[in-house]
Every structure is written in structure tokens, then in C-alpha cells.
Image 1 (cartoon, rainbow, N blue to C red):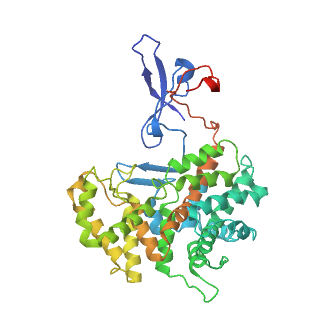
Image 2: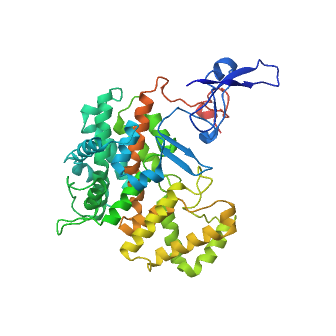
Image 3: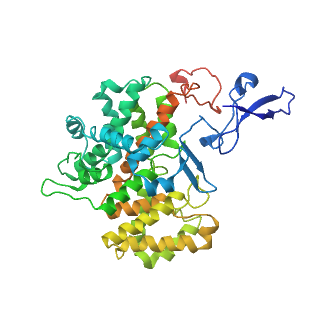
Length: 437
């Protein structure tokens, strides 16, 4: 980093000495004020709940401009990646910084494909869960348990360990997600098949049975691949920051990724598409399209407590660039499966139309986001709603790994240690138990 010629000056009204702070310029995006020496020089911390104005790291991986609706992986627009590349090419880009050439793509795909099986004992681990357990509860356990089976790649400071653990995680996540699904529905596990694509293999492991062979539908496989690409990384979001913070302690990569899975489970993060589908099902139970006006009225009423899920985004203040791509994919899938007359999908399209035309939503930029469309697509494909977040975790794994590896290679890397504004009791003497009221 090279500091700007311009400096920020912090002054105090109580006569304390002022402080000059360097300003750093990124290749794009806002300038950043360096406050690293703030506490040492002033004895004060900054206060920033939610880290809305704090850059905790420098990164070369993903750039987002929420006002413009722009998102780049290593400088490449996700719109172009989703149109011209598959998920494993995107994985290669995120991990290595450049898209692969034909030979590199072949070798990387072969390497990932050869690591898709998991240790057979993982099946016995699964049996410890209840059949009705949420898939994310299962996934948090399975991903963390990988460190018990692959001792040769748990040293986060070893570049070779990080490389092989990255391949293992990317390769095995589809297998683990499909195993979690099969377990909850009581079907036998389906082993991966090396002559299928990454996304095609995932869908076969999800939907095949020993009774008959499963032939992946090309439209659905491409839709699944696009979902993976669009969710592969998203800058310093909650789960990525969790992976970085967890990894900063020196824990193994599998544990760090398991921490990301746990964070992603929240309905405000990876559970958003599940929440959007649950909302649609609630409206459907109310009466469907005929009751949509009543539902919208409740959304507009601040006192109703009814929330519109799958619309708007904390980062994107314009139309979510991922949503446009998923909207195209959504209609392709519905056409391929002949589902336009399905009541829930008709309801979703009616809600989409209102959100894009009603001044209440347009003025507040509450556009349909990627979670709204990806939930519809996954339901159409046959993925049950509780599994949506596990699919998200599968896709995001490569982003977590890339961010973790970048942090470990950063010369400024330190164990994470946020500070606090303490508002509790000051020091006091412990009252003997018989004197406590």
C-alpha cells in the first residue's frame, strides 16, 4: 500500500494534541484512513457497530460497488463470468488470480474431480444426527469433521497444506451436501461419478437412486452452475469475515470453513433465499395471488411486523447485478420444466411485477435480489427449501478459501481482536452470599 499525499487530521475540542493519519487509495473504491496507531497515540478506539465504516484487511479478490450494482471477481465482471465460464473456471480465478487456459482448466477440473469422494466413515458420523435435523446443522458438523480424516492438510501456515485442503473442500462439498440431503429423506447415498461436470455430478448425487440412472437436464445443470458462480464470493461479508477471524488464530482450514458455514446459516445472510421461499409459501396459504394486495399493504404498514424477504440488499443500493442474471435463469428453468402455471411461481412473478412497478418499492430501491430468484430456481429444480443455505455454502466455499489464503499470505496478518466500548459496572467488591438481596 502506498499512502496518499493527503492526510487526515484528527483534532480534539478538549485541547488534546491532534493526530495526522495516512490515507490509502485502493485501485477502485473509497479511500481508507489508516487508524492503526490511533490507540497508541491517543489512548482512544473507534466505535463502529457492524463494521460499516471499517476496512479490516486489504484484498485483491472481489470488488463491489453497491451504488452502481457492480461486482468483480479479480477484476472480471460476474455477468461475463456467468455467461462465458463454468463454476470451476471461476474457482480457479478466485484462487489463482487469473482465468485458466484450456490446459489449466483441464488439469484443475481433473484434480477436483479426483477428490470428490469422502471417507466412508463419514456415513457413520451422519448417523449421529436426527433424521429431521436442519441440513446446516449437519453441514457444520461434517465440514468440521473433515479435519479428523485429512491430517495431512491441516497446517494453515503450510502453502502445500492450504492448496490440497482447498481442492478437497471444493471437491467434497457437493458430496457432503447431497449426503446430508439423502440422510434426511432416508435414501441411500449416491457416490460421485467422474465423467460428469461439477454441477451435473452434484445434481446426480442429489436426485439419483439405485433404482434407475439419473440423466442431468442441461438447462438445470447450467442453472445450478450459475447459482454457484454468483454466490462464489462477496467481499468481506459476515461469513467471510468469520472465516478470516477464525483462521487468524491459526486453526486448520476445515475448522475455519466450518465457522463460515455456521455464520452463513443466519436468515439475514445465507438463509435469505430460504426466508424468501417461506414468505411466498405463507402468502400462498393466505390465498395466493388473490391476497397479494392484502400482503403488500401489510408490508407497507410499519406496525404490522410483516417483512418483504428477497427484496433489497444491504450493499446493493441499485439493482443487484446477480438478480438480473438469476432472473434470466429463473425463466429458462420455468420454461424448461413447464412450471409457469405452478401457483407458487405465479405468486412469485406477481410479487416481482409489483415490486418493479409500485412506487413504494421503486423509490426505496427494494428490487428483487438474487435470493428471491435463486430460491425459485432451486425449488423448481427440486431442492427442498431447508437445503438452500447448504447449497449457498457449497458455492461460497471457494471464496472463503481464497480469502483465508490471502489473509495468511498478508505480511500484516495478525490474530483478529476487535475492541469494545465497555458500559458495564466498574470494579466492585464481591458481596458474601448471605448479604445478597
